[in-house]
Image (cartoon, rainbow, N blue to C red; front, top):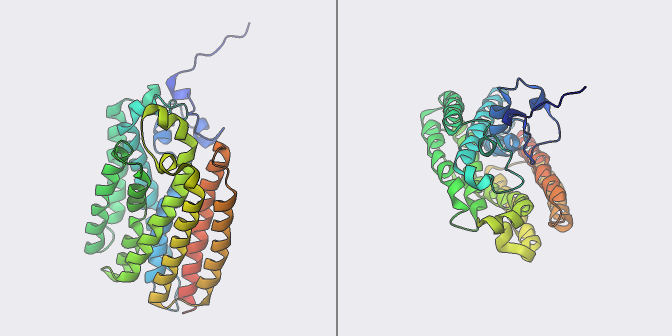
Amino acid sequence: MIRATRQTPHDIRPADAPPESWVDRAPRAVRPYLRLARADRPVGIWLLMLPCWWGVALATPAGRLPDPLLLLLFFVGAAVMRGAGCTFNDIVDRDIDARVARTAGRPLPSGAVTVRQAALFMVAQALAGLAVLLSFNGFSVWLGLAALVPVAIYPFMKRITHWPQAVLGIAFNWGALVGWSALRGGLDWPALVLYAAGICWTLGYDTIYAHQDRVDDAIVGVKSSALALGERTRPFLFAAYGATLLLTGLAGWGVGLGWPCWVGLAILAGLFAAQAARTDFADAAACLAAFKANAPYGLLLFLSLAAGRWAA
């Protein structure tokens, strides 16, 4: 006789998690914390880290490539701070997540962890991020700490405005400023223009992501750019991605980047245009695939900036 095994909250895989990943093979007690940090979905680390790398590439002296150690520090910092941000977001949104099919199985609404346990985990990740930040110059330390303001208010924005994606862009692209200041010790206008480019990029890809939840969001009563735009999403994406490229080009021109930057931006223009033109916003799987594609797009942008600096 075969006995059925009882599934505990630790065994529940959220509906928005990958079908199977290394997290499912981790010790049972650890799985909820890995899922709180979205360790099974590394695309978020890339989307947070890449603007940091952009800032480093833009600030690197002409004729040189970005410092690998600095890039590694930003990778570690992005990994732990993305986890801390996701944990905080889940704490704030636990009641809403319980009412949305895609998120009901997450560790907090499913009961796999308590709010206190999640909060302690968040603090541990934030302290690890602080350790990385303290390796930079004093200006960058204070600039990095200032990023906590948009991070803290972001989870509440979907209750207030149809444009929480704008606040996410402000938070997620702050690293472009820190990446620049880590080398320059301050800020200049090309860094600010690059930061604005990153915000436009996030407005594009996260609007696509928000289309996955637009039905549930409307029922629950939370807001998003997907709900605000509706049938106007496609022209909006062309505008957002176009602004991303124009502003990046302006920042690159401001520091005198060489020809590889312009080749890379031309390739990106085609990729962004194809995504804006072809994504089926009624298909959740297509929206998720388009969202994830922005990680390699952002990496291409970094390589374009780095090669442009080397060829300057």
